[in-house]
Image 1 (tube, rainbow, N blue to C red):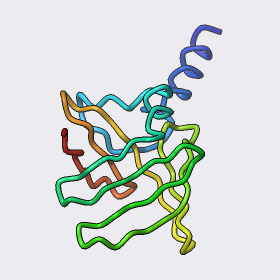
Image 2 (image 1 turned 30 degrees about the vertical axis):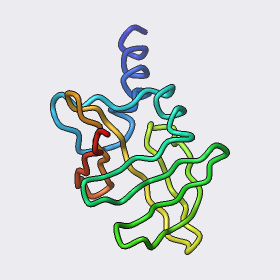
Image 3 (image 1 turned 90 degrees about the vertical axis):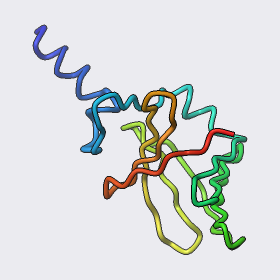
Length: 116
């Protein structure tokens, strides 16, 4: 019984629910931190900006000024999934690594968020 309970808890943890390529020291954002994305704009080092609006609206503005629009939702594994109006979709995992917030995409590429 105890072994089953431990297995269930590990399987329910965002860090283990998906095969995200996290590194030692990466801590996935909590549900409360993910919920707090609403109303925030995250700026990346390439000057791209991800804007999470209340109600689930999402936009990504490239350094060129072009924007892509869609909606976002938080998946059971703790990832943030974007459904763009163009039909393209993706999921990303946000983690804290030390003092830095990092987006990890499904390919394992890591994109640190600038601290303002």
